[in-house]
Image 1: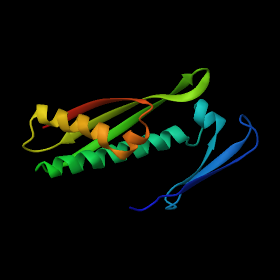
Image 2 (image 1 turned 90 degrees about the vertical axis):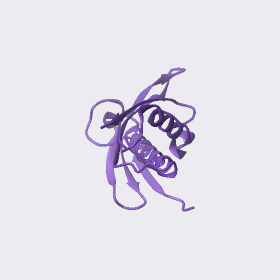
Image 3 (image 1 turned 120 degrees about the vertical axis):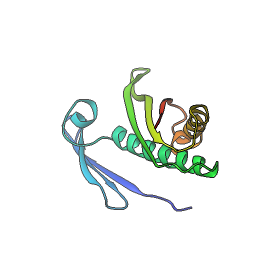
Length: 142
């Protein structure tokens, strides 16, 4: 299996400083600041990137599970809401809400919910984030 690399730099103090995050593929290279992470400032933040990674991993894992069970998904769209809060008065990711909508011909609701829950448990990013509560809302569309 391949390894992946990303990097970040930070210059200055927490509040007045600024940083840059870069994906190893070069497909994303952008700024982050205190305001983009803890307020509503311009730029990205680690939680947003974690959410994108989690949504992508979950969608792929669910597609693999469904395909292995003989179902061919037409589409799987997942979003992740990553909550940054406090635990023991320190910043922490406190909750991730995965919201998935899928179109999977010939699959009934009960089987879909089973696969959706199993994918939440089994996707590598969910496993890496096992110390965080992960909630799933999975909707089977037409």
